[in-house]
Length: 119
Image (cartoon, rainbow, N blue to C red):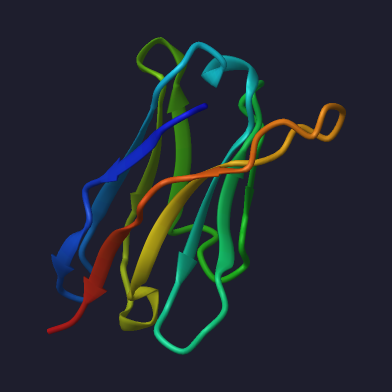
């Protein structure tokens, strides 16, 4: 079992920045892809950014150029740096360790952290 704990959410004005963190338990972090999702009220959960074990990244079109995903394997932590925040970025942000495509193992979620962008 893997536990994921997000932190760093809060209230920020439009144009501001936040950095989310997701700390993972266990010793499998360094070989796992990690993903950030978000869910706004009344909307489906959507993928925001992903990073492979080798550091390759992928972003939703809506956050490209504004958000940066990174990882520190020594700390078992993945980060989401969010700049130039917009009101439409308001959502609960979730950290996810996706299922391994070969073994199916994985599929763990954090509890979520609220991000509110408002003046």
